[in-house]
Length: 159
Image 1 (cartoon, helix red, strand yellow):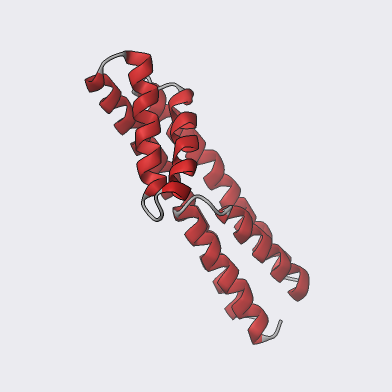
Image 2 (cartoon, one colour):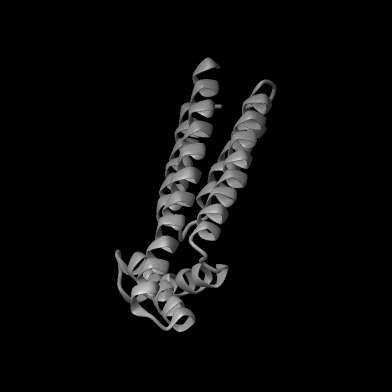
């Protein structure tokens, strides 16, 4: 693959990493797609690099849901709180640029917990627990995506 192709793949991977941290873009999907195209063009041993990176990303996806689920169960937070927080976060992203996603998630989770518990103190605890669980999933997904990116980088330089 020519240098400009490698740089294009790297740029898509960087956009994917940003998409993981700012969950509006499908970050992991962008990374897997970029690695797939790279393996398709390079061929041969690149498929082994792609398979290993895909395995790492898949493991990260499974682990993030297991960790978040355990965290939410231990704090007795229903999935509804995360869903409502996520939906309000998406609306918040468009209403209040830059900070709207986080602000919307917190407000959505808080209102959902307030309706469920009818106590502002318990609702704040629930919203905080939901925020921690969401942060854990983002951190885990980012970690495994960075590992996959490192695998690709090693494979690209080995060629």
